[in-house]
Length: 343
Image (cartoon, rainbow, N blue to C red; front, top):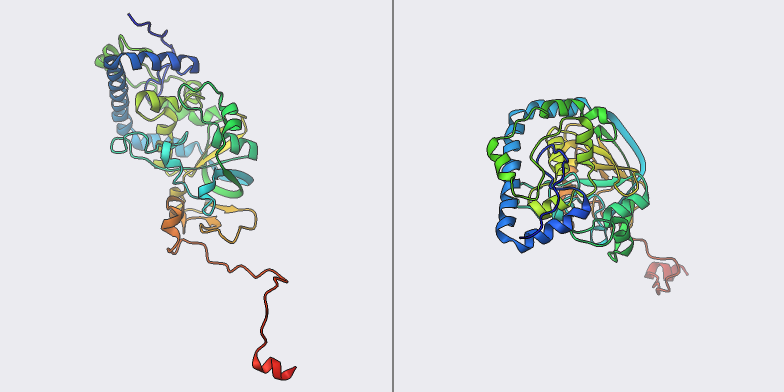
């Protein structure tokens, strides 16, 4: 009989995150790969857990949105933060299309069933360049023997960085546990069905239960191994679902500490700039090949969700700037007839 990993006692807020301690994931994965029937029951269980709590959240949608909105910081400004992106997005620094590929901590990507879990994008920046680089490159896949920091140093991908300043109307600060108290109060009494409890038996998961305190919620949202949930369970991570709730509430951004440096990071939802005064801008003089806008606000936020090809010939494109010819280029200048006569 195959050995099953020891169950974690960690509580959950939105669904069972299935033993978040990273050292246990390899054992769980190995077990599920050996036992196809168990793997299917494992996936079905997490889907049922997700849907059961999704129904409860829908019943409290307005209240959840209002509690998060009340907890927000207002008029949050930042100067010369850093954005690191793949080189291929270089002409469009504020493009969020890349965040849809495998998702980010606070947005759902297309790697999970998009019909069941609609993807949405986010724009990520960090308070300093080392943190931005590590967050962009240090995402260890399930089963990796490298830490996230080591993976970032070993990653050969070409990236580019931009200095960004801005001001956001509403920001939810996850480093402040108090900002989560009202939200926790609304979800702490969710009741799980006996059928779900029974389904969990015999699976390598903790007994299903929900978060009771704001500390447990904070730990869940900042879980360093958040990305493994989608890989193992084929459902969004807790933080991604929380990001969806915050975005739907009209919040402009989520402030959180980096899992690698503990420096501040922002997940920004430009779609919520509509009707507000939030803005982002590049700090430095852009190159002549820049296609995307230098500034994002309520008038052009849609540019973030467009690819380079999609905005090339659209009003969202940055105005074309003709490059001046270099001085003393060696070109032969032929005088006009009038200039020749004058000479």
